[in-house]
Length: 218
Image 1: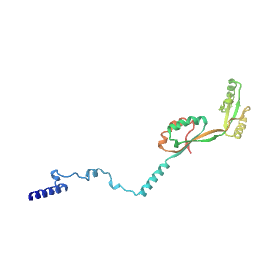
Image 2: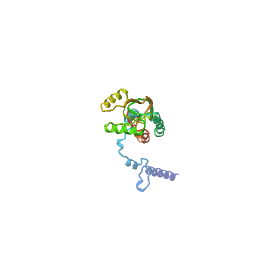
Image 3: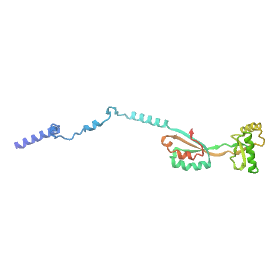
Image 4: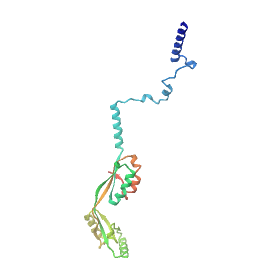
């Protein structure tokens, strides 16, 4: 019985020495739960700061505000109904539905200083030669119903067109008249209200369908 007690005391002493690392020099020691090698791998642990809920909310709100400030609003147009119909599937495929809208607008009428309609192409070509000789610029008309004919300028109001016609009459233009080329029509304006870098990276297919219109700030 006395021997058993002595053995228990020796075993307890040995366990105590092992658990406290006193036997580490002989390779007997428990695993170190503090894992000091991880402490050595830390980078600037003194920079770590535990935030309160209020501080965390404030910093999150500031980051969200900065992200919103970096976004920009872009518009393009006006587009007629055919152009808008071609653009819609491209927008749906390229962008989230909340990232764009096609807003109805009115396409204002257009007036031109018109010469025509001519009986044949030969007459049209002779008139072109006369205008070139007088150094008066011209272009084809945009309305098929007015062909064959020529436009000496387009305007957003008949008053502006008549002013230019009076000026051209001083340069020898006698047979031109003001003609409405296009009446007011329904159209659309493309709006991208919050364009960030992710959206900008997806805009090339959209630009290709804008019929020559450019995206510009709202």
